[in-house]
Image (cartoon, rainbow, N blue to C red; front, side, top):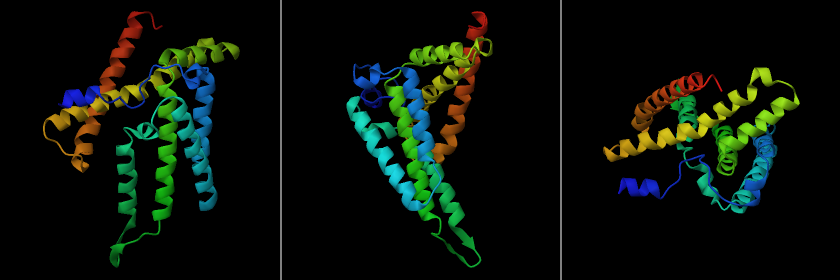
Length: 219
C-alpha cells in the first residue's frame, strides 16, 4: 500500500512534463522570476506592507500554478519540516523563566516569516516543476558565455547546486517512506532521525557525482 501511495504522489520540486505556457518560457527568465519572488518575499517593512506584498506573491503563484496544470497546495509538498523548525524556534523563544510563562510577543513575526518561507518554497517548487535540469544548465551556460566567464564554469557549479535541491526531496521521500513502513509517526523524533540520514545520503550522492565527473574529465 505504501508503494502504491508513493506512485500516486510526486516528489517535491520534481519536473512535470507538460506543454503549458510556463514550460515554454526560457529557463533563464524562470530563474530570474524565482530570484525576484524570493527577494520580494523577504522584503523588510512594516507588517501591513509585508502582508500586502505576500498576498500579491501568493496570488501570482496560485495563478501560475493553475496555468501549469498544478494544484496550488502541491507547491508546498515537502515543506513541513521547515515549518516545524520555524514553529519550534518560536516556541523556545516564547518561553519565559522569570516568572515562568509563555510570551506571544513574536507570534505575528513568526506567522509572517512562515508565509515568507512558504512563498519562496512554493516559487522554487513551481520553477523546478516546469524546468528541467538540462534547461537550467543551458541557460546558465549561455549567461556564462555572454559575460565571458567560461573558465570559471559557474554555470556547471550553479546547475549542480540547483540540481541537488530536487535530489534532496527525492531522498527525503525515500527515508520518510521507510520510516512510515516501520511504523514511525510524524513527530519531532521523525525529524531527529531522518534529517541526519537524509544529509548522509546527500553527501554520498555528492561524492558519487564528483567521482563520475572526474572519470569523464571533469565535464
